[in-house]
Image (cartoon, rainbow, N blue to C red):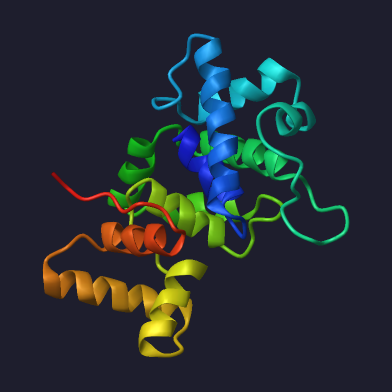
Length: 196
């Protein structure tokens, strides 16, 4: 879940290669301390902020100094990562399994509200990113997926593109989240991963 949170916030409006560098530094930091970054939850992610002395230091040592937006005095993305992790933990969500359980019990709305209450996350774009990264369907498609569908089929809203992805996946017998993720990886210039 830690990597999902970092990726969701740092990838919004950024080149994925930049996000991969942040994730790489996070992995290095955790491994240097004997941790397993691939199994880290929100609690372990919060521990990395304590390890380095707070969000400013985390931004310098692990993340980057990019703000959440171009608005004056916008908080650093690192601060948003810490705030989002704290919001999730306060809602009883530390792992991707916890998030999926909340979705299964139809308890995601209060979690979404907490996430979108973090400064710089109000639009819900990073929330959709988080859901996709955790293996859950998002209600609206992200910028890259919308761009692809618009190029292929004509203009459509993110919500309509999300509906189209789900409809195509249903017709083909595919998982909608995996289809969305495959289109996103293609558009981001990343190698598509194919099942065995």
